[in-house]
Length: 246
Image (cartoon, rainbow, N blue to C red; front, side, top):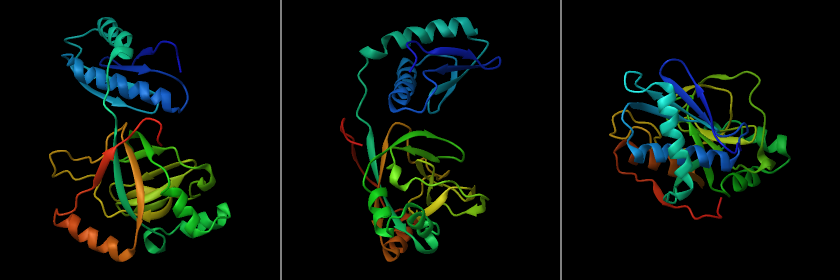
C-alpha cells in the first residue's frame, strides 16, 4: 500500500485515486473507507465514484471543479481518514445448491483439486468472503478470501450463456453471476436469490465492503426458495461482521 494515495487525472471529468498496486485486503479497506468519506462529506459536483480492488474512479462536474482544486479537497479527506469511525460491515447469508446441472463444474473441481465433492462444498461454505468490488455485469460481486485448496483455472473457452445466480470459481476468487451472461468461471452451484432486480428501489443486493457466506441447500430447497423469491416472500438473512472473522 502506498504511504499516500496517487491522484491520476482520467480525461476532463475523471480522477483516479490509487491506494496501492496489488490486490490486498488493507488496500481495499482504504478504497472503501475513502468512498464512504466522500459520501459523508457530500462534496458538490461529484457525480459518481466507482471503487475497484485498489483504486477509486471519481467522476466530477468540470464546471464546478478543476482537477487541482478537487485533488486538494480529496487530499484533506485522505488526511482525516484515520479519525473517522466506520460501521462494521454486513454479512449476507446466501443459499446455494451445489453440483448437478446447477453446478456443472463441481466434478471438475473435485478431480482437479483431489478433494471429494463434499470437501469442496465444505471449504467453499466455510468462510465469509469480502466483497472487494462489483462489476462486469450489474451487481457481480468479486469475492476474496477463498481457500487456495479449491482454486481452479478459468475455462479454456467461456460459455456463451450462464444462468443468473450461478456461483463460480476463477483462480483464487469466487463470485456470483447476477444476470444471464457469458462467462468463463467454473460453475459449482447456483443460488435462487436475485442479486440484481432493476424494479427494486435498490436494484443491487450486495455492497462492496460487506461479506458473503454461502450455505448449502438441496435442489428441493432451491426450487422452494426460487418460488418464494418470485413472490417477494424470501428475505436474505444478514448479520454483522466482527473484526477478526473472515
